[in-house]
Length: 331
Image 1 (cartoon, rainbow, N blue to C red):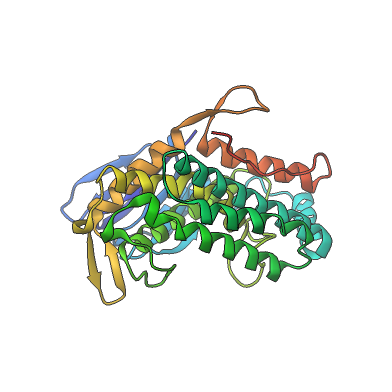
Image 2 (image 1 turned 30 degrees about the vertical axis):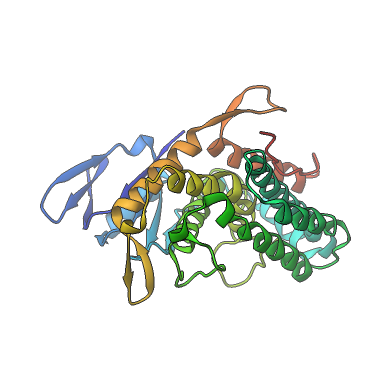
């Protein structure tokens, strides 16, 4: 599995012969093992040139940009080497056909909801008072099968998330990290800042995994395909947010690895300091490396591999080989 490189400092990327290196403003050079690198995530002010981008395209390395506030800004998505005209047609067919699209979208929301329940029941078993959220989400899950359009399905998904987020204060139990309500750009409090940062990371990770399949990231099913660049990664991320992003947040706060001292207020709201971003990313990478026993495969696979397997299952569904079933945690 190829690695992800994170750049927080300011500087320049250069190509030299058959490799690349990053040079900081202080003149320090860091050579990049291109054969082992799949993605580069940039959080600092970094200059690049055409030769550098050409080389990334040759080596199939994706480049992701984040703003000073940690918001995802965009990606350099090299020419797809695995894209298939046949698969694009199948994706488009399943998107245009309302029944086929709705069938996939229902399963995505069901997978997200059941994984949310799994997290809540984990904490209920540890004496957290999350019963109200569990009952609400179980009730909403029961309405998915009878939902007949995407906007209504998105409303169900939104209501499940709202009930789920209401349980965060009980799970975290830190007055400085109360949830209040979901806010995005800008996040209104510390907890929302962590959620937004973690979700942005997961969106780019899912995008990187899509690049290594025959799927086109521009055609999603739950999220509407429009003038936005990518939507399929948003769909797949819904299933894994509770299991990866939220569990990382609970761990970081529970172990006091991130505190209020790791944030500062700017003109666009609250932002994480670089130390907190690095800490979050380290824990996220550890989570992605964590392995679980996969029932169907019969062996241990990492969470990052689970994302790729989810995409393979979707491919088989689109080709009519096997009906898609979302990954649902069993721990």
